[in-house]
Image (cartoon, rainbow, N blue to C red):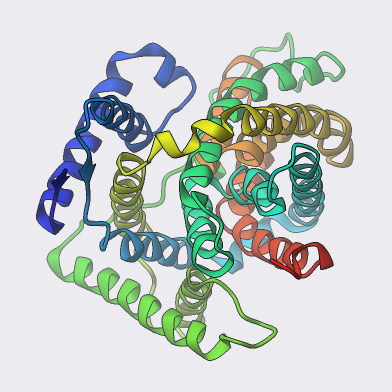
Length: 402
């Protein structure tokens, strides 16, 4: 057995990211379906470690950095949430949010039902529901840890990451076909008319850049550190109460309060570009460590039933986008683009949703409202609401004996 210490694990994680970057740059399939670099590199390493294990060689990593990196990522999500921007979306954001909530409820009901029919633990149904599909790798890993430590579910983290990866690919696969099907039913704005050059709007328009300096870096790092400290204290305070929440949700909440509280008081404006950089670094390293540590051999016995559940979830997502999201959002071109985006983050992640919408709008034309609503809901609200839905499901009598 080869045991890597803290420094060895950090080096290995960095190499995984470089490997993933090279793979995504050279393999068209990975680029086409927007597979993140840490996911690509991490899965390759996990497979290599599986092969080594057949020769009685096992590599173990020091994962002590994994949780702080995950919490730092959720802190940056909170620090990026500008509640004032809600006014721009208004009613459309509210309606889309209701559609998103509906999908979360359906995904968990479907996951639990299928898991029960296949003779699996109902908790696995939740993990293959909104936790990993709408939540993605970060949320999946966070809840996987909770399920392992609090509920004693074996291989929960491995199952969560595998489900999130599967969902990420499917989210990129079905978004385009769903949008093409729906666009046949509507009139595309500006169709057969010469379009005037358009400046990017909403999510497409980058924020005004400011130079990153050592002092501004320390300022942002301090905000993340405060979010981590206060979030952990809040989590400890809520332990054992009816409002008990996972640590990452408390950290995210503190980040939201810091960002919007400081702004409202006129004391400080969060440097969004730097928050994004630190958040992406934290997430990338976290995913690299989590994925290269995957014990694929532990998932072998669950491969077929989990695949069945996730395949059905993908079909449900497509049908929901066509018959619910598209209709409640107005049955027009913007609704079709929003349906493609919903497929992206309903099964995978917000970046997948953006890629789906960009593929549609590059062919058929712009949709400003879609690029305003989807990032707002997919990058922030989905995490908060998902936690509430999951907690409500865990309160069901079905899980009382767990």
